[in-house]
Length: 183
Length: 450
Image (cartoon, rainbow over all chains, first blue to last red; front, side):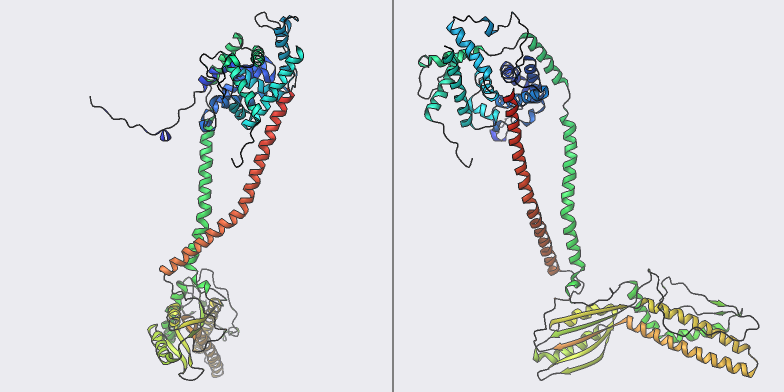
């Protein structure tokens, strides 16, 4: 059998691999859900946001340009817009809803024992997160819950990396103060 | 970026680095490298920060199995739904193709118009006084054909007159039009009059005042064309130039109606009245302009088709009247009546001759054209150089001119387009920028309100 020599093209000449949206979505579905819950503060709305994120990412996969950013930042940007649309659709503001008590899901606020310092601290943090303005709460969702880097957060929010870092630092200080105040 | 981002204070940067390290540590990344720029090990991290990160992580909403199943169902549905992008893509392609065709047409039509005008309209550069556009083709052909016909007209006329008297049925018939006739349709007009047995007189036709009758629009036009031309020559070339004029006129089949040449003195030069066949007018003007430097060229034209048609009609009527008068004379017996018929016949004949003469003159005027040529050796301020005379041919120079005009038009279109489109594009861009920022602020406002 004759051997066929295969020429290896330079990377600049090869067509970029199409984005596997489903694999990407599955890899960060939990993070997307955590982020969505932090922003919209409604589990059913968060579920809708995560589902719509996949649908829109699937339709727009051809528009993803790896030169413009990371895939995770791209899909979180879609999730952000979906969250905004969901909030507008529902026409609600800062109404906090909770699912009926479910023994499988722990409610931090109810289970904490007042005398436990760790519990007090955790409860203070939870309350502080709830009390944050939406934009700051969103940062908590992106940085702490979804684990995005500062550069990725900047891409999602459409701001500079410096701006993202500055905001993050402010949120961190706010949470710290909340914890210190609680202790 | 045109300007560099402002740097955060170092303590803030250090804080953020510690946060990243704490997040890594809390995530339990095995072998996760330290994110700190100074290489501090995770054990040395701020305990408080670690605890804070852990507490925030503990508040992370988790995806329950029920939600996960519902999401999975939505994912499968989304994958099964056909992508509407392909339909839109096809429509977009059609739009793009339509826009591309429109853009090509928008450029090709003015460019093509300029090229066609350049091929036909060089005469427009010449100073011209034109009351009517001279026609070509059938009009000239009829004019050229009229020239020999005009000289032989009288012969034709005599033959037709004798044939009228020999008409067997006693009907006077008007002669058919001559070979150089101006009837547009080329048909033979037949006019018959029936004389009652008792009729002794034939009412003469109305006086021959030319009342132009409108010729049919499709009739070949008959146009009188005249040219006034001035050419500047060197003072020592007067005789040679005069000879050249004679040669050119003879080659064109024309003749010099008059000429006056002054070979010496301050007013050296010459004036010529040139008569050439109308079909050779443009070539003759072009050849005469090459004798020296053309400084003036004026063309005039006058459409006399209606006048010629009217003359022909009047002639026909008069001939019919004359034929009837001859018949009446032949039948008259009484000497007194015969004398009266003779006087009538004489009057009608003279009127026919007069009209015939005018018609022949008109034919001569349209079959030949006159050029009033002036050769001058003096240079005056009013002698502006006339642009080159177009002899009808298309050569490299014409191509160069046409190319220049195309570039002019293209440059003009680009300039006008730029003047209009650049501010519009700026406004549109500004509008898009404002809209994008407004949308971003709106999104942030919505999230803040949540």
